[in-house]
Image (cartoon, rainbow, N blue to C red; front, side):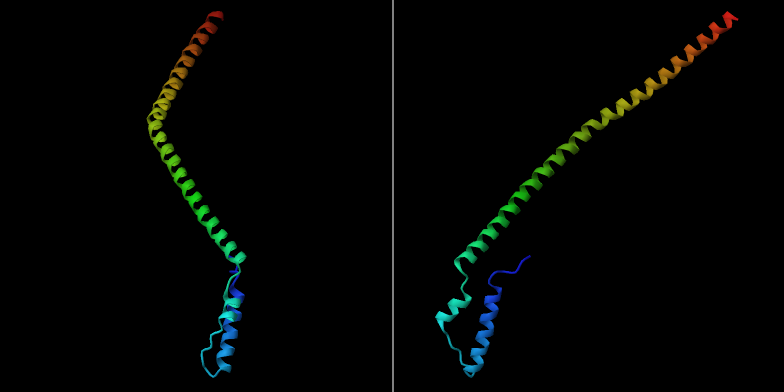
Length: 121
């Protein structure tokens, strides 16, 4: 994450204030004009920060909505899968039965062909 735009200004103010305190013999001096100049964020900096915060909030809202929608889709997909599982099992049994029938028919046809071959000899 990038540094905040007022970071250097605050540090400069703190350094200036500590030097001023040392030079004043520990007395607290308040200079409203100088403090507002060093501590105050420019309107552009504040607006920029506000815009960044609003964009971050909107991004989080969108991501939460997207996550909720994805969770709903996953839930529906799981429900459909549970509904389809018995159908899949039934179809697999039918396929196995049809394969067995096909093998039985193949054996019968091979026997008939073998009998025809014996007749021709």
